[in-house]
Image (tube, rainbow, N blue to C red; front, top):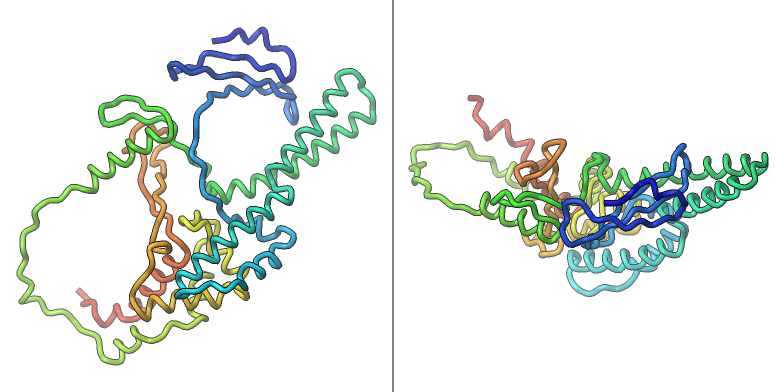
Length: 336
């Protein structure tokens, strides 16, 4: 614990005994008042977090030299079938965009820079209450508000506008023991869903010989087997919800829509390859499993529900198939 009365200077770092985490210590940082009328205190407990893989966020599409960088990477010759080539080019694009993003000030660095400039001005105001400094403070406050709004737009996409906590750092296990840390919480989650979803039970055989189902006509069968057009796939992408969390490849539907003139041809070839051969590679077929809170506070695994974050290629395939079947439902489903 610590004596808060000893905190009086900006930049003070006070070490404290962390609450609820044995054998660890945290510290308190004292910050400038910034946009508020008091000095914020941030209590920090060091905890190792897993780094998330690099993702292509929408704000990157507006970076200077984005399209020249994309065109240069996408024009590279990649051997192999279209689905593999698409995955490899996406990796190259992410690497190039990471470098491009680091070269330019991003939303986070703009906020940091604006905070520093405002803090410097407010430090000077402690000794010199001049009109010029007050005007300069007002300008820096306006700039910080603008950069915070830009950062908020980025974070809205990162958190899918739900404002849910995206890190599970403490959870009760099956024995009601509180465990801490991302790795430990991940083990609890895997065990819970493996026990919950991985169990098997015997099922009685059912005789379906007396059940007669409607069948489709040769014309309808031909329609289901017809080639998929680029226009159909483009329309499918347009119907996907925006600002959704990307899959393991780190790319969302907006990326392909904005860059369709460059990436559309290879994307369509990859989807058509699936409908031609009925096979999808491990990369586009892989998913991330995310835990969505079901309650305001979460303490056990039952407070979460899992969702799968799929690649855009997989979602495009999975949405194209039911669109074709949809027109046949009236003829194959009995009115009863």
